[in-house]
Image 1 (cartoon, helix red, strand yellow):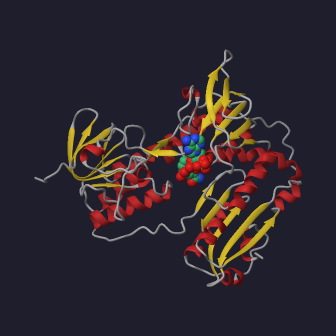
Image 2 (spheres, protein in one colour):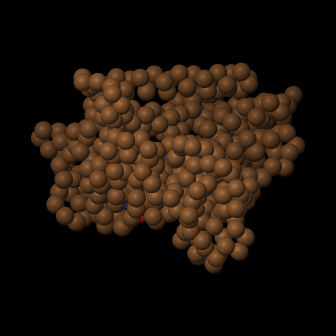
Image 3 (tube, helix red, strand yellow):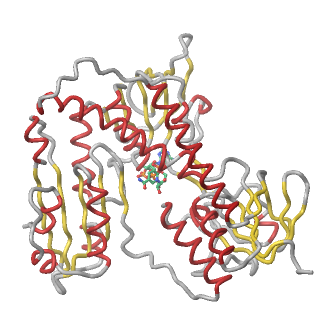
Length: 448
Ligand code: NDP
């Protein structure tokens, strides 16, 4: 008889948890996973995937407008939110099924209920059943943070945005990060009046200043209103069901929906972690070492619940490496340097490596190369929107230490260019590559 019911019990069937389950099972481990919502987690169910589909929907707005310059007559184009919403929901359900299939194919036992830790080797399920495991993995992700203000129950988070009964005619979005800029781009393109309020004086902290500034300029030209140094004081529901948002500065704004996108907090409440001896940081994140082991030997954690890099591919890489190391006898480390990232704003942003400010802080001999251009298609249709590519080079070594792009298809282009930056290639290597013409990506090898 084995000592435990399972070799590995995972709490949370999101990106990190599902990957860890599959890899551990492939090494012969007996694996169980608990999920109290839907298999797939934030990315698949209420994050990256449905968001990207909304971004695709929004792009048609510009494309349909531009089509006439290319000779197409699209006289009767209308948009129906309910069709998009329901099709997105169906796609999410299809992917949820595929994730569930992955678990089944790998003989992972799924408990579709909430789980918490009773003891270092015991998981307690909502049904009251207790299950023992040699190793427990916390992969519970994060949850939107909504600051405390009167009427916060009237505010939506990204969780609810995919289920809106109708497209809001007017929407106020609080926050200046990923979610605020992605949803403001989507709703503006779909026809809503969009106001973004931000507590600070800039959007996309962490991204290169010039790139963030370019997005702000383009977004403003598209008609999005930005208010800085402004927070929500309270939300009042009016008789006609619209919402009056009182702000810390300026006049109140009446809207149909309020989205709060003020960051995400680790999902650690009610998991019995502190009681089991698992140390959390001041923000409630699980503290782990470079093998994702917590302060309790049998308990590990990967992904957003550790609040290090809140990106799906990082959680997947961590879950994979954890399972390989713990059950496959490997010793894999995850290299957190030069992680590419994207903001699916309109236009989108792609970035890898150091920003100009970070490179200067590190005391590098900073050399900046840029390409500020109008994409051929934009020029053709009379759209003044300009793309900006920016390369940060360390003059001492000629190495490209940062690459930042805003413009059509930037994330697609950046992913390939990130390989060069990760590999430590130099500006001379970029310049030695002959341009692929005509493309936007060719600007990468033509930067002055
Ligand atoms: P972000 O961390 O990107 O941005 C949070 C924003 O809210 C910032 O502008 C921040 O201001 C502001 N803020 C933070 N706390 C408060 C507060 N108490 N009151 C008012 N404003 C506040 O978070 P998001 O919610 O946009 O996204 C959550 C996470 O999800 C991201 O960090 C990212 O990791 C992930 N994500 C990734 C995506 C992608 O890869 N494309 C897409 C969507 C989400 P300040 O700058 O002053 O701190």
